[in-house]
Image (cartoon, rainbow, N blue to C red; front, side):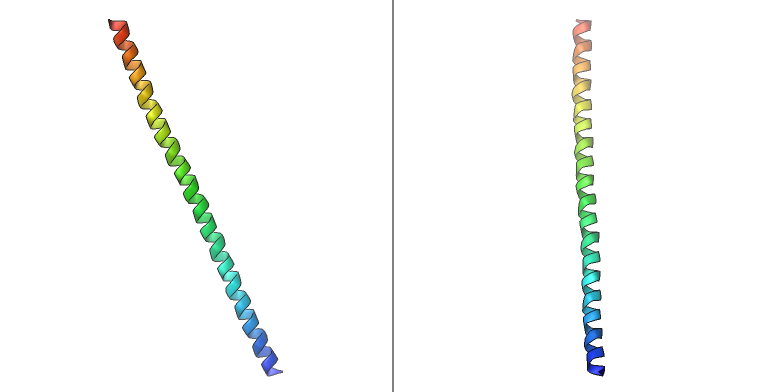
Length: 68
């Protein structure tokens, strides 16, 4: 009887370790998704900066054409 209880306790410890491992994997997946969102936001900011510079260039060239 005691041996059976001891084996059940081992099984419960193993299941708890698997559950903790699963929680760690979920946390890592959330971090990965967060990293992907940050990369997408960085790309948006770089695109906005590039578009802003191109827009300023076109505006400045239009002003030069008007002055000429």
